[in-house]
Length: 331
Image 1 (tube, rainbow, N blue to C red):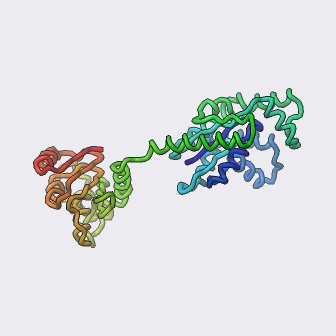
Image 2 (image 1 turned 180 degrees about the horizontal axis):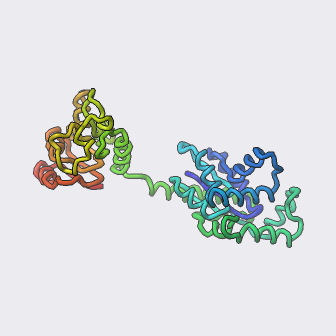
């Protein structure tokens, strides 16, 4: 889970981030990207210099520049916090990461002003008028400038920090439960899970015509994988090993001249090579099987076929599966 934090001055984003860090979240901040760049340039770090640099980088690299830099640092194996989000394009970029949720931390304006005065940082506003001016510049910017109001409108969750620390912690804990439940709804089904693995396996294919893969699963455990390509020990298709594929023959033509084994064929043969029975298993294929692979699937005792895309000229295969009582489903 990636929790993006945004909010106005002294709303309590840092306090929320500190609480999440105690719960195992790794901390990242778009402001830290700016601080690092200012240090590299040898420039003083002030609120004004941070704002100016942020606007500069958005102008040069696009409005999502800071978010893209932070995304490179995220570890998919860990929950993360991304703090100091101030532009809607930063939200859009971060939503490309799975399980990203934007949380707004808010508090009453006078409460936030009192907190600023209490912490008495050198560059914090000391009058109500200067506080309002500073906030207006951050909230209602346009173009590549900070646009907090637009960011807040995109929130998945709002935490109001007007009272005690314990009440704030309780709100954060409750928000995590809600977001975790939402994330659980996005959990892939077993079929989607194994098909995604098959799509990764397909990247190993060396066929010049089409990259296809198959994964054989029994009791929710992968027992064999295969992808299309030339036989073991033969020159790879993408190195010129199959004249038919390298000539980019029309789809469906010259199949008897093709030297490449199909993905389903390879997954079944690999299982046999290693002495693994595939009877009563499920095969996941990125394409629906051809006639030859259909016959192999039936004779191997595989009971269910799940495929992603339709293979051309294979209407007969579906009839064979029906006759052999092999379930065949398109995902």
